[in-house]
Amino acid sequence: MNIFDATIVDYLSKFSQTSKSFDAFMAFIVDNNCVKGVVLVTMLWFFWFQKSAENVYNRECVIISVLSCLVAITVGRALALWLPFRFRPILNSGIHFIKPFGSQALLLGSMSSFPSDNAVMFFSLASGIFLISRKIGMLTYLYVLVVICFPRVYLGYHFPTDILAGAAIGILITFIISRDKISKPITKQVFVFSAKHTGIFYALTFLLIYEIARMFNEVRVAGVYLLDFLHIHIY
Image (cartoon, rainbow, N blue to C red; front, side, top):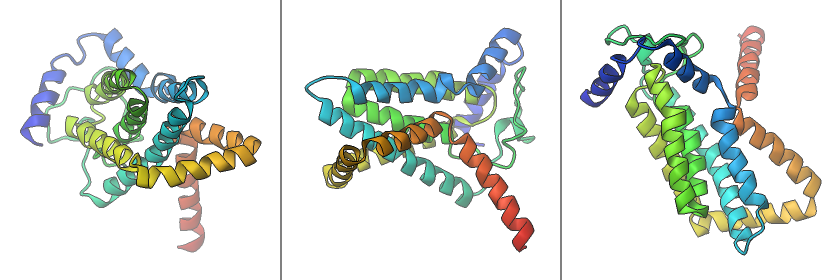
């Protein structure tokens, strides 16, 4: 563990188990999708339907944000699989970490902590909001850092560098995709499809936004069942 992670983890451990209410509140935030994804996707819906002179630009940014989120989480997952496995602080017996009350990591043991999926996804979405409004975007960045990411470090689910790496991936991918040469052809096709097949467009968009708000929980569960099925029937 590097000195940066060690310093922050050791400092936060001083507050662990000093307040059952605070530890429980941190655990509540981590497990509550309404506090995390729902807040951000609600903001995207707001900008999509807001009547303003910048309506077309706002909708382009929403499309960029959603697309970037999908690309970013794919890249993040690929890196987690390809890079050397990193145990989470709560599961790492080689460091001095005091487990907060209510901290659970039973379902995270098989997943490398680097980079953080939450940081990748939600910093990517926040970057899309930043493209629409710098003021609201900065507040959204702060919200993602403090409300979504900090509890994960405090509870031992991630090292600080997991969060920083995830944030860098999410932000970088969003700003790359937002380049006109990349985004314009894509947003143009989306607008054409939405005008021609409005019902299908909004039905599919709802499903996609719903899964983003839920951190693709249903997709992940389905993937696990599929892999188990293939393993049983093929191998």
